[in-house]
Length: 263
Length: 272
Ligand SMILES: Nc1ncnc2c1ncn2[C@@H]1O[C@H](COP(=O)(O)OP(=O)(O)OP(=O)(O)O)[C@@H](O)[C@H]1O
Ligand SMILES: [Mg+2]
Image 1: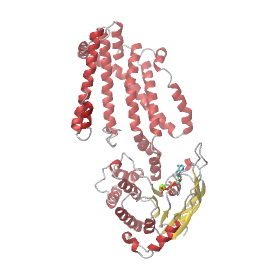
Image 2: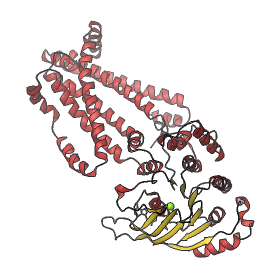
Image 3: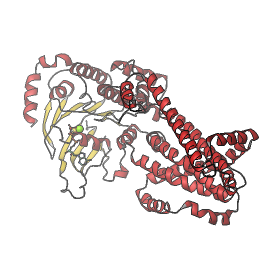
Image 4: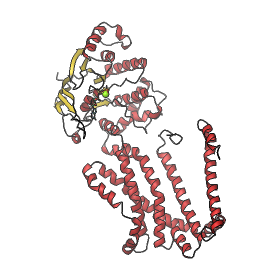
């Protein structure tokens, strides 16, 4: 089966600022592919270019070199005005910043996607309500973003994308701002949702444990200019119990291998 | 007087009720001080230079009773509000049109900023030549005065919109119209209201100055008529009416703003 998403020799450098050194390559010669229904995790140190990579895949930013294929067809462009963010709603993107609309309450932020897509009906409303329950935001539906905690905002942003069910979802450290216990819970919920619908997920994190607990495969990004330093297939069978992931056979060895690759 | 800072510090935190009283008390004290100064001025300089408050109040009462106040206010408001509305619409639409085209912006913006330097009031005689002595010359002046303020504040608002929100909306599949209407428009509302609040008193002033030159009606006409016969009390009464007009409209604008921005954190109480 040909991969759903293919990244080929991707490179990125930001335009140089006046009076600064020409900017370095943030990404260079970066290649990988994602199969349909795969849960891919990407680990890399801070500043490696993980968010930059996801921005390019989601087409909120241009690549400077290389090519991206979606379902076998090239979707690459160098012209910022020709970008098609989210390429016809096929790619959902949970950004590192929550990017909630400050004038919309929790529920209205979640419904925003459905609203603009004209998919707002009783069924989708019920689905939104269920997701709000699932991530523990019940009771906060009418709160505005500035009245929520950082972790609650991220959870709202997460389900805003989940609710409209795009076939590919990019996630940029969605659980970075929550406590360990909530995080395990959210990871378990995400896995449950994924196992039900089998979306294709590209999940960026700097937490090796998380990369192992969630992924079918984990890529390791090197420092700048960033490329794929290593690739690990996670040998732990599903369904996985995220809470006891440490105790599962294969975890310790995989963890050690990945840690050695992350400088 | 000296213990006021101490009391302010005391009530700064929770009890909002007493804080409200402090604000109202402060306003009342300020108003009293103003009237006292006014009275003092009248007594030392004489009624020709400074109309006494009581006489001004009596004049206002007389104007209110015989209906002239209302008809003058309506005449002034008619022009001020019409000019304000026309300028408001164009001042908002133009930045929205320019938003998507950096090149058009580069072409138009300098022209706008350059013509802003034209002294609008000085155009009035020339406009009278063109449009005669109806409402038209005043309307043009008011529109010009307001337009630049709304244009500049709206443009600043558009430039300040969080691009990441727009990116997010595009990824989700929102139409450009939706983005303009919801994200850009809502984000720039605080700027827009600031513009309106700066512009409205100017619209009233511009109308009044216009009425000095040509008119048969209006608050400016009344002030000018009083001035010509050295009726200082009349001048003062007219100024008070103009002030009250601006205050009233500002209160309305504030109300609308509070309603439109009700989602914002309650910043009014915040100390920066
Ligand atoms: N708009 C920009 N202009 C110039 N340089 C940028 C821009 N955005 C990112 N960079 C640079 O690209 C590099 C990678 O940034 P990026 O945000 O992708 O890192 P990251 O891997 O997501 O890090 P983190 O884990 O901290 O989120 C950084 O060195 C940063 O300085
Ligand atoms: Mg990042």
